[in-house]
Length: 368
Length: 106
Image: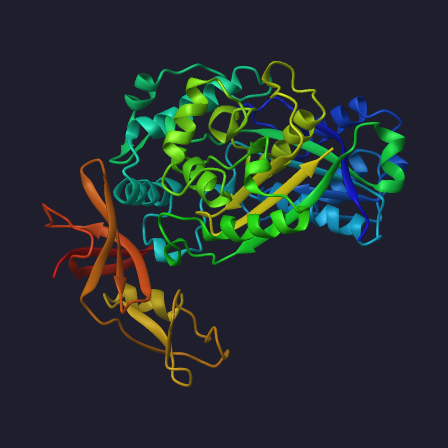
């Protein structure tokens, strides 16, 4: 299997803009070309788009509008984790030798149809994500004694981190008290416990070992990949643990020959505050039932190692762009180019993304 | 409209079962997830068990498990002191764009 590196990236400002999805994607592609030395349209073998938008034939459309005539182009849709799924597909094309350079561009509109999985009849009439998130939250509180304050600290930390992210949707500092007193959505969830859908796009460029050096002297290698789908129905899974993330991370750690304690910086899927706690535990970064204390310590020491760009809660959640923005951020962190939100000399980074009430997950390990 | 949805519309919560594998198939499907054979439909066995609950705007919603394998979300009524593990019955069910289940203590 050929080695694959992330060699370029771009993020547009996340917003509420009412713009066509292809325009949003082109904005990220344009920026990627501007920021990547020696990159020409003819270098690109693969164009993958990542979105839940209902527009058809998007990857060829984006290719044509970008002046690219790729060997391979198609869309990847897998709800919230579309971007990381597209990244894995691009990796596979290069690792197999089918391609040398792949452009992955993800975007979403604020009104994306991917926010609710209508198919899942096991949710009854309670299809909106706030209902499964409330079940997770209540169950975690019941089993581990997790408190509302610990949940609020996730939001406070990620909103604070987003202050140093110029592309964040609505960077604003909130106190723990403001979060705990924000609008009550359910008995177990406040407005500021939630990420917000928005319009935005991100792009990354992947390359084989033989071509990477043409574009950068700081390639960041994807050294581990794990994916797992346990179901599509929310109600089939445990309410206090995310099995798909647990299994995906084990695969990624084995492939990269690393382990949770060696992760210096991570972008994880905090669609809701409870998700960050559960994911930290299922990745093995925090002990089972203790992620609330772990995040509290991060907050109190201003440690940005988890969700330095602000996560989904702080940066916004344009579904198809989210996974790609996560990969871009970990690449930037490992290159030491994250500016004010730079963590201290990270050597190994991790991306975790998931879909549909955590029924499927992708975990990537990245290293210089 | 699927059998599951049509039966719900008539007020019956039916589930699919594979006669060959003797397994309940959930979420409902006309095909067995083990042998891909055709399933048959039957009414779910009550009572269920309360798995978890919360509330929105003063109205409770919950997850209930039936037959140790089928979990479904619905509204929870007439339950001033809900408790995980509590026995639960189906008060009513229906279908209007989405499946609708109303549960109460057994």
